[in-house]
Image (cartoon, helix red, strand yellow):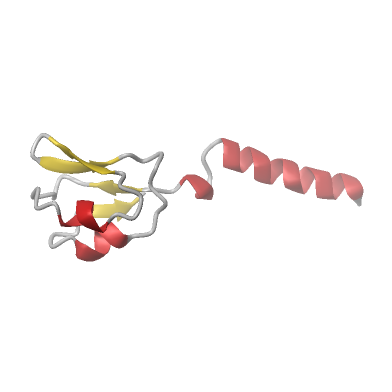
Amino acid sequence: NNLLIIYFWYKIALYILIGGVFSMAHKIGSECIGCGACMSECPTNCIYENGGVYAIKEAECIDCGSCAGVCPVGAPKAE
């Protein structure tokens, strides 16, 4: 029984380390028109301007979806 529990937690830890569900992030697609609505809505300030359009620092994104909710063209999408 203890081995089963250890194996279970081992698999969860491994899944997290290789980028499982806990590393989800939004990504801004090519539909971005550069309006900046998403940037002011982001609670972690992980959205930045990049050559006239916007991008997300994926390591800092908490996948809250606030950016997707205000984008007029639906550019931010969950990965």
